[in-house]
Image (cartoon, rainbow, N blue to C red; front, side, top):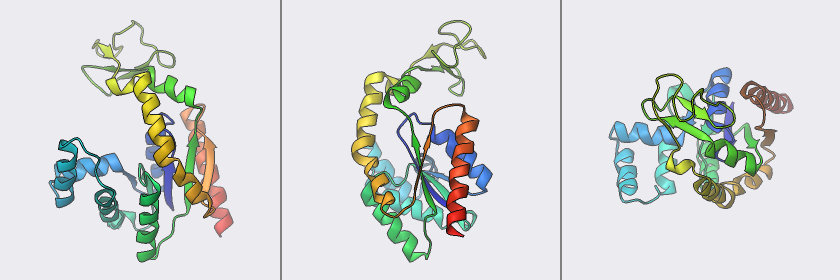
Length: 221
């Protein structure tokens, strides 16, 4: 299956992308990973992306699209892929359609993870990260440390990342609404969108997503 995953920051896209890709036996292609991989390997595209990032500018669509194209052409993506963070706007969605047409491929589904805005803000703004080991993540409401401000695992100091502040989260949501959300209507016109609630336990959200994709597969066969 070839799937695009969309949803606001804090909807749990990263977590669900990894789980779904594993269950569907397709590679998880995330723009963040693509940038890191190309920059660390010092590919031409990586050098180009880094030059924009170092100057504090957004990486242009054509560079992101070229990286995604290169990744989708790898042998492990032959039977499908799950795109996370791409396309980010309608121009990228149109470019992806063009790219798939060239390769005689089509998208199977666009999975839209829905979460209320206040819940998204609460999820992200409540996160606390361990300074010693950033993989230790706590939350002021959902995963409270035994001692306030102290990591249960290693005793490191817990802090709130600057980009997790409520003000920054609301700015990121505004960017999502103006730039990324329009791709949902774009794909709805193609009959590809499957909207599911991103609320509740992680396992339940995964099951909802798999059910939505199964119904998509059944409709097309």
